[in-house]
Length: 290
Image (tube, rainbow, N blue to C red):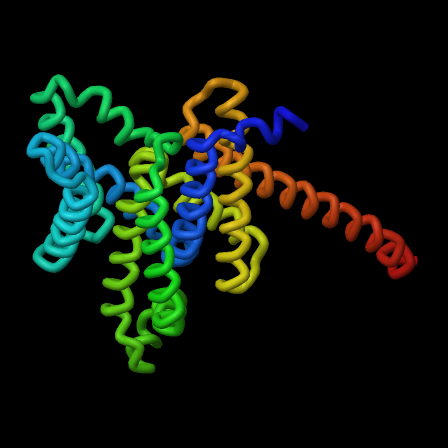
């Protein structure tokens, strides 16, 4: 049992475990709505669109989280402007801003040679360097996401399943959509310090998509997504410790792997169930034809 317990006896691994648990809660609360709303591509685009803000904040020795948040808000505003002022779809606006913001960030980074090491941490995260300040920030972010998800639960449900009926019933789907966008920005900005912008998508979408396979209602799906996130964090830290791999990438990779494992098991069960049902129906078919 030493191989299982020894890594978590180290203080920085304990902080990484706590950070990963909080990120899992935050991403499960937001990711469930993202999966139901079909906003996975938007979430990925926002995570990449933060690069210019982070790069500029780094060059001017400003707060990286503030730079990331401002950049994400600018991207959302740009997508909304393109959708309102042209006949292009929202997906087209997201694609344009996704490439444009990422390109701008790379250009800025290329002008600062000393940015290379920090860029790696930005892209892939550094969960093992999580501090108590990070834990506090993540706890506050998760609490805010929980409050918003609870207060706006009915408008979110109405918007996700039928935006037109939501408008009829007075749920103000546009405001609900803005709140959901704010939750996505909160989750991405709060999580990129731990798992990086390229990998935050894994914890934001993969556990929620895995929970969706169980076909439960929204609240139970959030709980299931949190549990899958926790399992990815625990196993990912263990694998990272013993195999000497990048912790953030290992956690995110396992979160995605869980989806394919559960989806594979579900498909196999449905196949076996279908064959069993077919075998049961054959005798009755024979009797009916005699």
